[in-house]
Image 1: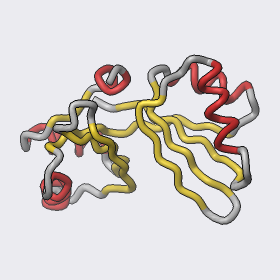
Image 2: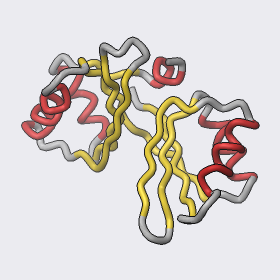
Image 3: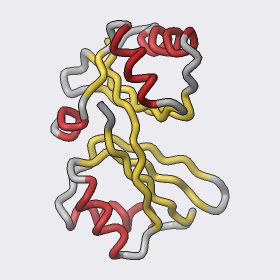
Image 4: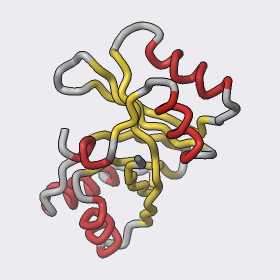
Amino acid sequence: MKVEQISIFLENKPGALESVMRLLKDADINIRSLSLADTSDFGILRLIVNDANRALKVLNENGLRVSRTSVVAVEVPDRPGGLHSILATLAQHGINVEYLYAFIEKSGENAVIIFRFDAPDAAVEVLSKNGFTVLPGERLYSF
C-alpha cells in the first residue's frame, strides 16, 4: 500500500514554483498534497497528484528534473498525540522516518501523514498490525 510521490528539483528563484503549477494546471492535474523544502540554491517540491504518470510526462517534457518515489500515507485522528502514537510504534520496531508531511482530510476529522521510510514494506506491515490505517494510493488520489 504505497503512494506515488513526485519530487521536482527547482531553482530557488522567482517564478520557478509558479511555472510548475501552471504546467500541472494546463495538464488538468490535481494536486492532493505537497511539501516544499528549500536551500539557498534550490528547492525540492514533493507532490501527490491524481495522475503521477501524466505529471511526470508533462514535467519531463518541459525540462524539469523529476523523480518518482514510493511513500506511505497513514490516516490518523486529528487530535493531540495522533502523530506521536505512530512514531512511538515505528520507534519500537526500529523503523526510521526519513521525512514526512501532512494534511487534513476534507471532513476535518482525520489527518493524513505522508511518510518516507528507510524500510517502507516493514513500516506498512508494522503499522497495519498495530491498528493504523494505511491508505492505498487510489483513495488518496481521489480525496
